[in-house]
Image 1 (cartoon, one colour):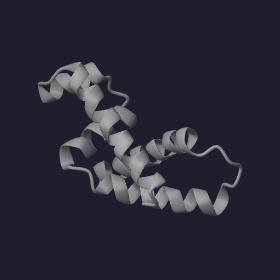
Image 2 (cartoon, rainbow, N blue to C red; image 1 turned 45 degrees about the vertical axis):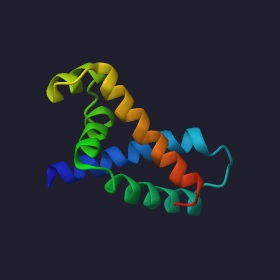
Image 3 (cartoon, rainbow, N blue to C red; image 1 turned 120 degrees about the horizontal axis):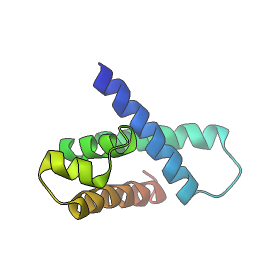
Image 4 (cartoon, rainbow, N blue to C red; image 1 turned 90 degrees about the vertical axis):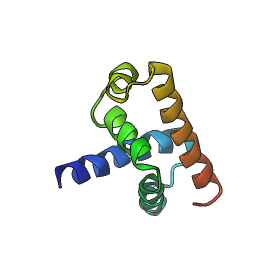
Length: 97
């Protein structure tokens, strides 16, 4: 149960970061709630490993290096995974979910 709460919190953080990067307008209430739900759904569609890496990076405040040690991959590989997933989510939002 705790992991689920952590994942939901991480999704909220990702939402805030993506919202800053993607949308520059002032309409927030309805648009924000709709986008937040879209992002939550998109994150849930990520492969389990990617979902966990995103959670560790965003919520757990782990560095790329620390995550890489846990997964026995390089820091650069973790950075690629985080950036790839962020781009995926952005593209899907821009296309309308």
